[in-house]
Length: 373
Figure 1 (cartoon, one colour):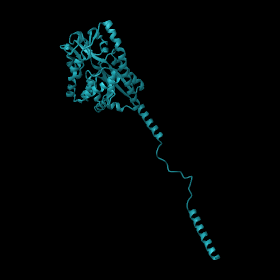
Figure 2: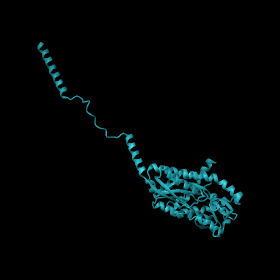
Figure 3: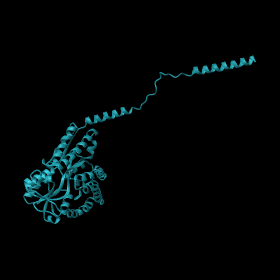
């Protein structure tokens, strides 16, 4: 028995010694050994680096842009264009310098749009149907006898339909900065009482060079004579034209057209509006810091023009009524609307516009009117 106990004790001691030997050969954890480096930068560091890179790009960027249109200092489009050029230059601290030329000094109308398509350092403010050569639906969006007020127009401009049109224009290198540069509604201005399309037979009206305007004046019943408005007053004085179609602010504007033509037939056939635009590739190259400012300035100046003109229009009308002998008369709007229906068929044929778009807009505007009184 003693021998058995001794054997058991000896076995336990051997096992214990073996365990101690094993532990001795196994290194203990070294708390001083550094952990493997984490090569993933914190999100805050990455964002800071990106911001610094963006700031450096913005600080190094500079561009000089020419801004051209046809308007004169008495017109709201001139005032808004001048305001925009000054605002962008100041707010971007001169990194985007915009130099404005009005009065038809440089290229205007369709030639201005070509500057954008060609990628020149250029900004223009032109009648939206001039973009129909590139995206036909543009002419439908500003077709005749469509809108009654600015709210309806702005509602359509904010729609997915117009967003799609803008995207297609961008593919043609035309970036639409803003659509709010409107200044009332265009009516027929002559020295003749006009109530129906028949009353315009044989009447020669100055027209813009835009094909949509030429076609619409024909459908209204008159004979269009395309020319720049800078030539219009002398053309009226010499009998080349009998009047023009235009807004209240145009009638009250530079050169005092109201002294030559005294009767306004309230056809309100077009919203008087312009779209502010530039080359898409130029827009995309501008650093985000300055591009955001450019966008904000475009919107602010457009809304400023639209509201300022609306506020001022009744003042202009009253002044011309009481001091200048100008008269306004209502017309047969149903007759003029029916007379202009063929314009939309022509737009489809001429520009390949969506044949269903006009009705979509009519339905959209009708729904807006129903919901907004």
